[in-house]
Length: 386
Image (cartoon, rainbow, N blue to C red; front, side):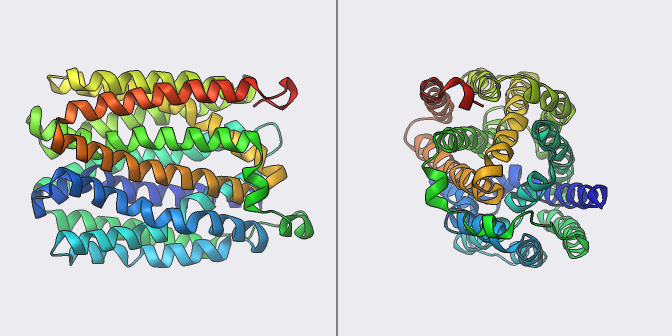
């Protein structure tokens, strides 16, 4: 039964990931080409997805700990099955923003709950590698999606949305077939609370990291395509190759890094990986050719791959006491805030100064944030550190 649960988790995560990977790197480019969106509107449209997630994710995570996860997954997958058609029929930038808000609301029922589902069935002491295994279908889908999306958007954007629908329907089928997670102690589960989790020092470290990490990733996803299209004259196909190859590197590194995260200090791996991808952000404006941009995106994803199993494994460990769904929901909310703030800051800076300045600023914010995480971790007793 446990193997069956893992199989369904992996299959649904892959379908969600490839469906999202088709669109996410190209939503800014789609907004620019289809609606001639300004920099600030590029940021708003991209961020709309995360804005609606902020309101719902913590409460959905808490509810999933108290009442089970399958119901939430059903709601999310049913909403997902209608969303690609909504994208097809949008005819203004305002309508596109509304669709992004609905899409984000549906997403709150999906990826965070899938992660929490696996967290509950992960063996004690092996959380890092189990979360790394979950990242395999996540990163594989994210690697294949942009390659297909870049090819389709050069032909006709609606074909991209049709293919999204296929994968979201597969997700719906997988979720409907999901075995339920057996709760170990329903009375203990009922006592989980958001306020209790926020009081924990390690929860705050994960929340800060989640914000910083998504601030960086949102900049890469939303403005590297604009930078490549505007300054390097790259087409959708070449942009897709950049995202697919760099994500494929993350895919290949997940399980080895997951094993490492179970053996070494998770917070140190988070700090090291974050420093690597922050450095890549600062160097991206110096790219002048396709190969420059590809290399720096590879470096960015290597750093991100180092942090992923360490941070998700930490959430699983902490969740054994405070509720996996609750912790994942709080961290995901912080990540959603980063996904909102990053593109809006970058879009504003792009309009007022230049796109290069956006990469410099977000890179420096991350460096400062890493210092804060390091100082917070030093305040923890040695026995309570990740």
